[in-house]
Length: 385
Image 1: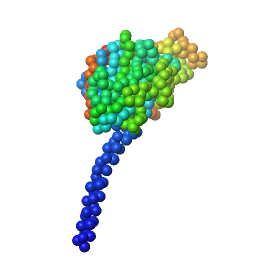
Image 2: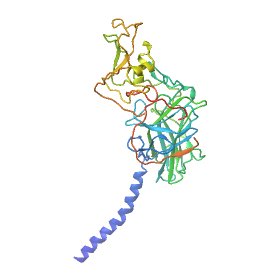
Image 3: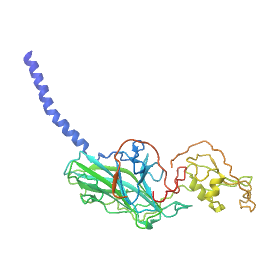
Image 4: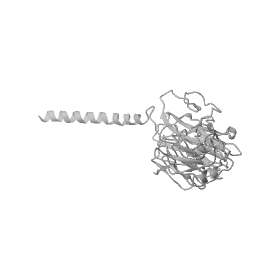
């Protein structure tokens, strides 16, 4: 009996001794497995953003913001088409001042000698039109003369200096008014590596600029895979980034008929924004000031508009209800019409320094200047901020 127990105990010890190293080896391989995303907050979800001194807005958890030439403005964006996939994207914005900046994230526990691939999708927009934010009846599109350029990099040593000669960069590319993927491969030389995003605009800088980042990934490649040193920038279909790609348009507002009393009232439908409604009725001679005053908004439009809400365009007696033609003896009023029910979306309104790293905060961002298919016209970006 004792001999049997000793044999069983010895068998257990042998199995335990052999199995434990195998377990730890496989766990390391799982962490480094090809296709496993090693980044924190790769899709820039809204639940782990944080604020920090020196940044106008919020920074996603795990990421650090760096910038040259301007106080960084950074926030969580959840408005289409400026988000590639739900629930949101990382927006960097500003204007009037020279800009070169981006974000970085350090990743620990990588294996020296392994090739890693960093990919992120970027959407750039630049504009010098303060009044209309480069928006017309066809939607919002960039003024491309400001040469907003994008690239991504990996520092295989794990450094955090965006100007370091150790960083392996992709080529500079453009991605105006649409999302394109930017990719770079590098061989780790340390157990920590750092991924970087980079955006710059030409001089003189535009009055308004934005870049949106989404769907980031860092994966370990198999032996002999990848292009260590420079993978280049690629689009969704694996092709090179198309420079000066066609502009991506947004929701078009169809003007609605005059009311029997000669007023013009727009009933909000899904996709309408304050700005797109205003643009649709400019042919009636309205100004932003008269539009805002008529709806009782003062200097700022509301944070939320709802499907079914009625927005005043012109007061009673302004147009012939039969022909729709403007009358010369128009009157004005500043009374507002109540809201309807339905769906609505709300918003809230440099030396090379890294700012922040990753605590927790929540919130939303001001949507992009100009037309956004979400129900709000964003606040103007102040000069120098």
